[in-house]
Length: 60
Image (tube, rainbow, N blue to C red):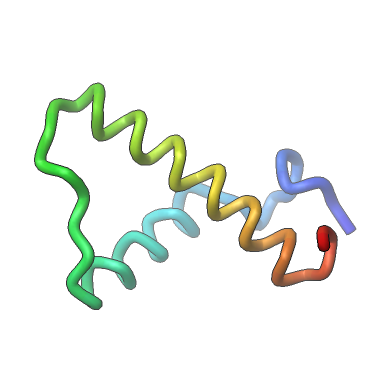
């Protein structure tokens, strides 16, 4: 199995699709500056990497 940092399946589109699903379920990004938005999305990307590793059984 690939490392998530080099996995070609982990694209900005994946993060955008997850964001869209969260928004459809009523979750909202903070209405802050672009800087804060970037920080939040960076944390989201890290959490998403962790999620895909758990989902594929690459971490326990």
